[in-house]
Structure formats: C-alpha cells, structure tokens
Image 1: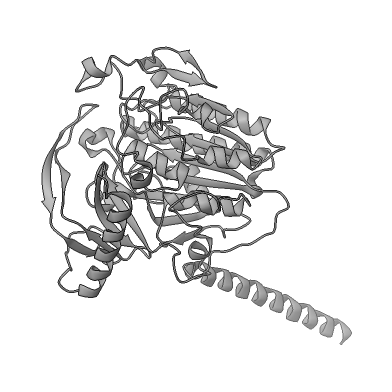
Image 2: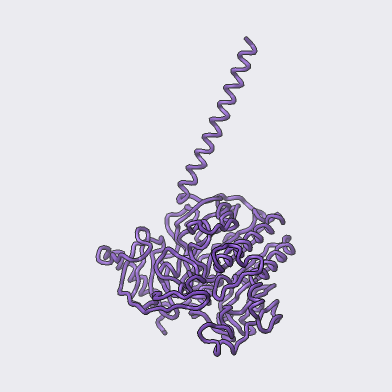
Length: 478
C-alpha cells in the first residue's frame, strides 16, 4: 500500500510539472503573438551599453531574411532577428546617401542640416555645427569608431576622424564615384577613390582588386576593435559600401550563392553580420550591446540584376515606401524581448535620442528633430512622441506621414519611375512622372496605389497642416 501511494504521488507531481511547462509555453507563445502590445524585457545594468550600427548602402527591403521570401538564405541576419526585434515600419527621411546618413548621425531632418542628396568628392557635406552621434557619445565617455563609407563630408574638418570617431577606415563617398563610372567616367575620373585609415590616406587610388576587399576589410577592423575595447563602452558605426553599385565580393564569396553577383554580395554582408555578433559573444559583450541592422534607403533599381528588391512602390531617390522604408532589426537583450516583430513606425532620426536614452547620454542641449521612441516601440505608450514624419528627395519636400505609420500624404511632386532595368553593372532608364495631392492608407495599401483623399477629408486636413508647418520651418528660405 505504501509503495502504491508513493508511486501515485510521483505520477501526480510529474503530471503537475508537465502541465506547468505546457502553461508556460502557451503563455510564451501568446506573448509573442501579442508582441505589438509590449516588447519590453527590462533588465537593469550597471554599465552603459555598447552600440553597434550596421548601415547598408542601397539594400532592398526584401534582400535579407526574414524580410524577403527566403529564396536566398542569410542565416546570420536571420539569427540576429531571432535574438532581437524585427521592425517592419522603419523609415529614413530621404532615400539618398548623404542625406540619409546625416539624418541618422544627427537626429535631424535634411531640411535642418541642408544635407540633400549625395555630395561629391571634396565637398563640404555636414556642417560641424551639427554634432554627430560619434561626437555626442565620445563626449559622454564612449570610445567611438567608424569602419565603412562616410559620405558626410570630404574636407579636413568634416571627415569622420574630425567628427568624433576615435578609429576610422573606409571611403569618404560612394564607390561609384571613380574613373570606371558607367555613365560619366571623365568627370568622376578626376577624383580617385582614396581609402583612409585614422585620418590618413593609405590607398591613393582604389582599384577593382581593392573594391573586392571592402566588406572584408571593414569587418576585420570591426572585429579587431571589439576584441581590443571590451573593457570600456563603445559606439561602433559600420556603414558598409555594399550593396551600392559597382558591387564586389571577395574571392571567398564570388560565385558562392549560385544566384549571381548581387546574391554573392549579400552573402558576404550576412557573413559580416555573423562575424560581428560572434565577436560580441566571444568577448562577453552580447547581453549589454545594442545592435542595429538597417539600410540608408531602398534599392537602386535602375541597375537591374545588380540591385535589391522591395515589395513597395518605387525605390531609391523617391519619397515612396520603396525608397524610404528600410528593413530594420534591433537587438538589445536587456531591453528588447527576443524573436519579436513590430510594425510600430519610427524613423532614423529617432535613433540618436533613443540610443542616447538607453546609454544615459545627455542630448537635452541638442537641437534635433527625432524623439526618444522607447515607450512607443516597446508598447508602453499608445502614441508616438513625434507628431508626424516628413520625407524629401533632394531639396524637395514631398510627403508626410502620421507618426503611427497609417496615413501618408503626397504633395504635388514629380518622381522617377523605372522604365527599363539595366544589367551586369550598366544602368537602365527612368521616366519622369507626376503625382497630384494623394492620400494613402499604408496599413491597407502599403504599395501606395489607391488614393483615398476624397474619402478622408479630416486626415487630409491634418496632414496638410503638418506639411505647412514643416515647410515653413525648414524650407521657407529655399
């Protein structure tokens, strides 16, 4: 009898344990499904977090897993997404190189900094009156580094080593601004692409051979930096030159995908992400490091099979979603719950104030346009602290979006639409189109092809009011 009772008790406790595990897993699953309500995983930390920003060039929204259809496997980016939060409604204020980069680094709209489009060699770029993220974090005691494409100024006081970055290497502008330019080699040939390291030119005239090494070189510098600076908080900015044309992959990745050179380039970028995250983990920094993965804008579709893909309307150099909406992953184990997805809208100008908040870096004296969106993206607040988000192309203010990402109003403006795609490094052709005042519901119609302006007079009036405010604040002198 005693044996029977003892056996029954074991069965009872075992059954209870199984039920508890099932309940735990159900609750975990339910939490993931309701991730729009709360993404927080707050853990107090005695030391400020490290920050790593991986900023691709002209990458399409659907290039990497989990954003694409999965035809090309990118396991390291996919793993980063599993360990962090996938943001599907992240934007940049202008879908062109320099303007997008300046906005990220300053938290300011292009209309404020007057950095529009893409500046050329030896040009001024971002004025020193606008502090960069490097300067802000360095002032707060961070060690800072930039390895990659700068494109925010190519004069002695506007290059990255003079703008708050302790260690640097890379190109000062886009890798197509050289003597092998497919359309204007005579003009761009006047300016040899130089490779810089810590304020000095180490390669006077970058060649095809050296272009193939760019992703590898940047990654090696990143890993060495992490290994050497694990004892002190750091800000690490990694603006890759790829997959901007002309595209190149190192020998180890040429032909690896079996799907063409562009896919080879993506595989090497995916490898780079893996090397960076591996270095963080091997140095015990993973739990206390913010990793941001995104792109400066959408794909340069004129280059056909040398360009990325987006499910949205138009592409780079337009204010449509195909240009301004970028894939984004943010991992920070001490604040963000892993393996989540969010459609909360926010913009690259919000990253400086948000990351500064997480790092306890004071930005209260800076005149910036972005806001700390922590409570918004964590689901702790039902309202974005921004009133709206504005989009421009070059010097033209073109569209404005409600800060919840639902409604977008296009002002009357011209834009370029792909007429014929190029191939194998040669560009195709665009045609110029016009759009009248148009309203789109991005939740229902993210491809922006159903104008509902007549059906939503109140929303239209609100966005027109915001547009007038933005125009008067930033473009009244233009």
